Length: 231
Image 1 (cartoon, one colour):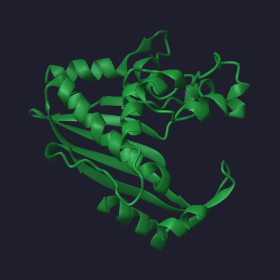
Image 2 (cartoon, one colour):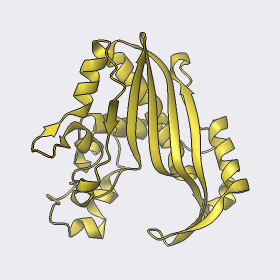
Image 3 (tube, one colour):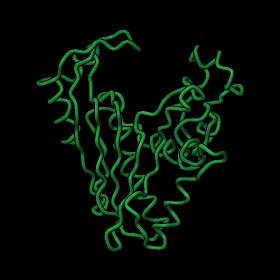
């Protein structure tokens, strides 16, 4: 939690004002923040200064790993995080690639489990990673990515936390997760939980010891109307 509070304070102290075109609001912004979670010691990153939706965060990351592309499937797991993006985004509602109610399109887990190949077909990135790590193999490129610029138009939302790179040293598994943008007061604790849980799950599946999870945020910000709560 100290890392969370320290980042909030850093943004308040050092952040620069940026006008966000998507939301029409100003936000205080810093570039580059690095957080670390020691999964080997069971140091679960729960924030207690505000309500934490940790169960929903875990449900969502499980949905990603399963390759879900439908908000109804996420609801069945116990999270409603995709309801609005799938059904209330006017641009997506008019998108010819939308298959109907609750459809999210080709984003997040749907990309990671079915990454399109230029020559046709797709690659299951997660399966490759699990297979390699289970055999004790690390090719320095065990990367689960949800980022495919060529598919942005086929999804309701482009990913924020888009890359998860697993590394194996002996029998210990590490994770480096990269997030391009983070609404710190609203979303950071959600994402912290997901990074921690992702390493814990993959370590368990592959029979490895979990080490540390490293979480990099490129653009960390607090919106103007959030400052009173977090100043």
